Length: 92
Length: 200
Ligand SMILES: [Zn+2]
Image (cartoon, rainbow over all chains, first blue to last red):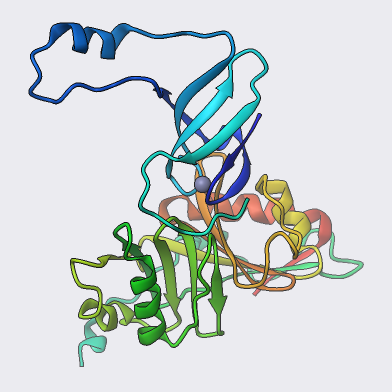
């Protein structure tokens, strides 16, 4: 499985760390909405198909990435920086 | 001058550094390994949106025209600089004390400077089989069109994080954590045995 880091280009999955489901919506830290916290901690779509995920290129540039991966085929459909701001021209 | 009080730096490669020819060198030495021992190794980071400002400052302080773009870099012999992550750059100088030259230039609004001169070890591999040996360590493309002169790459070998800059058509400078340097160096020597290597 290759993941194309927007900065580093295509790299082996061994260089990346999975950081969890990218669909989670974290409540405001002060929120006392227990349903929202419960959903954030436990509710997962667990689709057989395209899935929004957060990965870190921990063995490379260390950027956090937003990745869409097909959980059946492991095809990587898209990658982008998880947080905008860095406008560095990408290599891919 | 402050320089005279700087401590003498010990090489972490110590007892594993054996100048001379080794391995299968009867038919020629195909890679040359050396420890570069630069005086300054800096990590510079720009806050989002301040990257071009930082590139400009690097140019002003070092005289290096750092190309914009992922992994862009340049080396001039005594000095080198390359991007290794979004908004982050490694800057190297043969001489000590380059951090002081940056200190006034990088304001808190632009970014940060971290002096890693004592934290990283710089190893150079050069020669006609340098690409071959490097390809045994790192799963990246070392061919010149994919990894151009001056460019930098961040990758790792068995969890030993490495920053690599191409400083010649057949030459790479590898920056590894000082604490892993001796282990990495030994592995690099073993991997170079088949092609014949010289330690300088
Ligand atoms: Zn990366």
